[in-house]
Every structure is written in structure tokens, then in C-alpha cells.
Amino acid sequence: MANKVVLSCVQCGSRNYTVPASKEGSSERLELKKYCSHCKAHTVHKQTL
Image 1: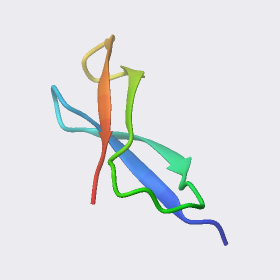
Image 2: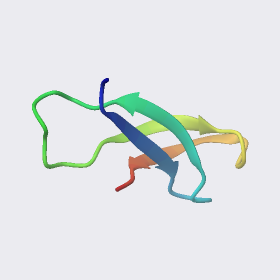
Image 3: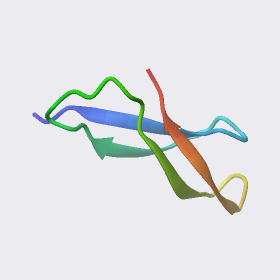
């Protein structure tokens, strides 16, 4: 089973997305601009722990 990374919105804090984890195990957190259904806007989503 593949490892998953959870992304949460930086504005409202809701956890909206899961994406597959990278294989090399980078120490940096993933940061993507995605649509948040709670904010109803495209916002930055960061990797949670």
C-alpha cells in the first residue's frame, strides 16, 4: 500500500486532499495551490504531519 500525504488549507485549516508520497522521502513539506471547497477559492495547501 502506498504512503499518502494529507494536504490542509492554510486559511481555514480544513484537510481537503490526499496525494501519494514521493519515494525519495524529501525533508521539505509539499505545498500546492488547490481549490478549497470551504473557502470557495484557490488557496495554498500544505502538507500536514
